[in-house]
Length: 406
Image (cartoon, rainbow, N blue to C red; front, side, top):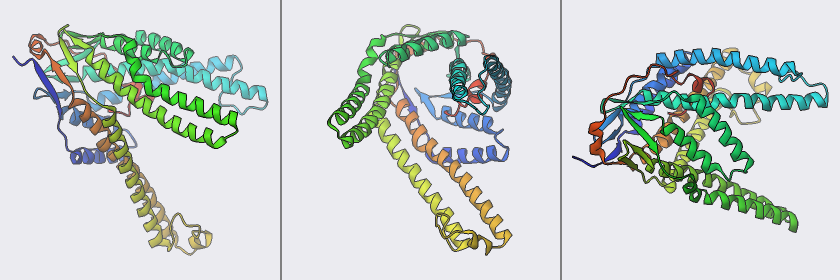
């Protein structure tokens, strides 16, 4: 029996990019309706390119069930948010009315924050249900993954942990990260085998060291610059501290992903290991950003060439005034406008494809290729689980625009 198997991700960027382009244009031509089928096709590609021990994963979700789940979620959200606005109006808080006095302006701002807070439970609800749906539609070695019905329990815990994290100015963020992941992991299944999240939330604190350094730089430089009358020091410190904070957030996410993955257990004996590094992820993000910047510059150059050929001037030139436009025929202006809109939309679609291939796919590959499964021979003892037909197909995640990622 093989006691250790490794994960592998084998996918070329070209096929995935063109799959994205085809599905994105179909989404555009169908006014966004095809996006549910587009995401399904891309997931099937990503899942099938991922294997462990030579056995590929399978995604069994459909575009139709995602579309129907979205419609149901939209109706529920409309009713819920309508009730929230009626409740605010009952207390004299009108979010969309034009304020006439300073008191009304304050009440309107309060209404905006209350509306955002009212959506928070739905956001956490959507996160849990989206993960449950993806698991329920994933198979490996013919066995289904699954997750228990516990979305509202997750909502209550997420709100409580978020409040504690805010009250402690972020110091208890590791506690929130650990216990929310533990809640979902302890309710996840592979076949008839249950996952368990081991470990301690205090073990995540080493991953926060760069966050502490970033905050220290911000406080020291801003306070020092103000005390010494050196605004340049405060400005430079703010820039350095902010960049360090962003790096610290990235390092914390990678560190917590590694630790929480290593502490997961299946059937008590089957364990995971992963060695993803912050440097690897940072390199992917930087090179991906450079690739996207290159695409943006090329797109801007193409639009500029279009205007230069039609009007004898660039789109970004101040010479493109009313007289230049009057000298052109209406047909030329309509053609230029249409081509500009098309190139702009095409540029957005290409940027999405480059981001998918250069960032998302490479991060998935970096993680999967470093994952190993120990005591894998015990997987032979796992049996099939009953199909989950109750998942809402990420309808709330799509309706709240939380379902953009793979």
